[in-house]
Image: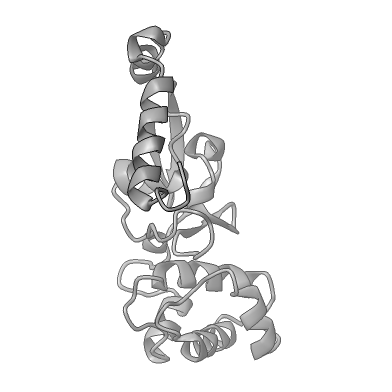
Length: 195
């Protein structure tokens, strides 16, 4: 075949012919697909969320985020990137902030999990929630639950000495609306209110 005969169409046809000739027939593969799809590694676990114990039967691969949203029905925690990059799924576990999309639910058994729904006491908002409202710390609101949970931890950890320090310790939470100045103001205000 000369260079003149080498066109995109001939390359695709040749590639398809080679792929078809070398493909292994599906019936030649071991029958593992049926076994994998029917096997479940479900475990009965207890998750203590916002002071309430939830008994759940979950597969070992279920993330804490999916357990909270899909099984327990607490949809305040958001599924953003599902890769631990955006922070929309931030919750507190034993007072420490974690990205719930990056941890398995079975690993959190016996720990105290707090979601955004667990911050307010009845009609009394948590100081961070109130500060986000007062300082207009949100626009679309999608990232707000994760921002609020991260802000609670930031304050509890003592990382509110300056606006730069707040920015640094809140940097794991992304706001696609770029509401960062108002978020920093909210954290600063809440830190004052909580002292």
